[in-house]
Length: 177
Image (cartoon, rainbow, N blue to C red):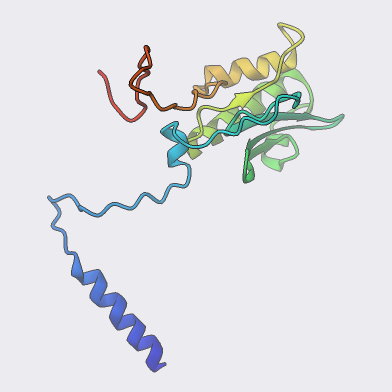
C-alpha cells in the first residue's frame, strides 16, 4: 500500500511538471500511431523474393474469400496479420440480404467494408484481385470500393534522393499547395 502511494505521488509530480495553457502548443509530442511511418511512406515495405509468385510488396492487402455460402473481405497487414474484416456471416449484414452470395451481397459487403476502412483510417491498400468479367461480382465489389473513396493501390515507398540523382521525388511530409 505504501509503495502504491509513493508511485502515485511520483506520477502526480511528473504530471504537474509541464503545465500548458489552453492557447499554447505542447512542445513535447509523442506520436502513438504505430502506422505513422507507413502513412508518411518512409516505413520499410517488404519486397519479398523474385521467385514469389503473388509477391509481398505491400503494407496492407485486401483479400476476398469466397465460399459456397458466404463472402468475406479481409484487410491484412504484412507483419501483424488481419486488421479489418467484413463478412456476410455477420448477423447484422446477413439479416439485410436475400442471399449471402449474390451480386447485391458483394455490393453491400463492399459498402460496409469501405465504411470500416474509412473509420479506421486505412484508405489505401494493395489488391491483386483481377475480375474476369466486367459485370461480375468481383468487379462490382472493387467498383463499389472505389466509389466509396478507397484507393486500391498503395503509394510507393519513399527512397532517399542522392545528390547525383537527376529526378527529385516529392517528399511525403511536405505540403505543396
